[in-house]
Length: 229
Image (cartoon, rainbow, N blue to C red; front, top):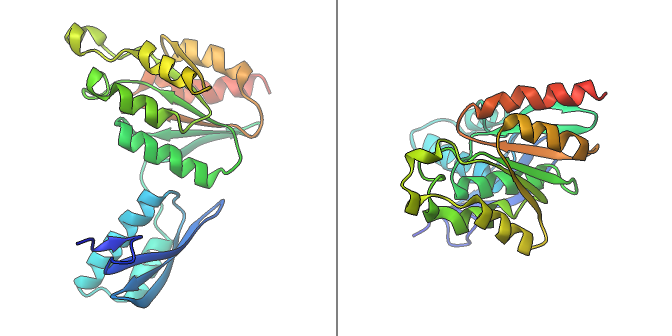
């Protein structure tokens, strides 16, 4: 039985969710009765679900409701989770550790709610042991399709993956293009920065998705944007 969530059958039920530019607000019902209103600076349904689970657990262990409300309202999240790295010329650069299709999809959906109406780019480095493999090829294309435009880096250390198991970035790009998405592969961070900077315009949101250093693209991209003024 679902214990918390958006379902009407949930014991801890999420209602009245509102995603705003700087915060998310929602209410929780406990056993069919109103329990408390919450807000925090994070975006995305998955963060609301996680926060609701944490609130429920804290309550079960005896933490007072006002203390839970205050703790969530002041929660600042963690590094590399929807972390704003820079805002330059109206362009927002986001760093996120997402490296599995499910996490990538939730991250991009969260950015859609936070930056509604803005063009969303996804720059993805297939770096983790799972993402470098063919097993998630279809799911990766599906998750990246949430963005308006996609750039995929060459698969990290591809030679370490047996050839029959390797992710085909071209298959992912082909799938995205068949849906009318702008999608391309570029070999590394330097080439990505060189190509994308002239393509970006004020209002764009760029999500950089990798579980590694990604050639220091998190610093190189803002610096390149600053140079063009």
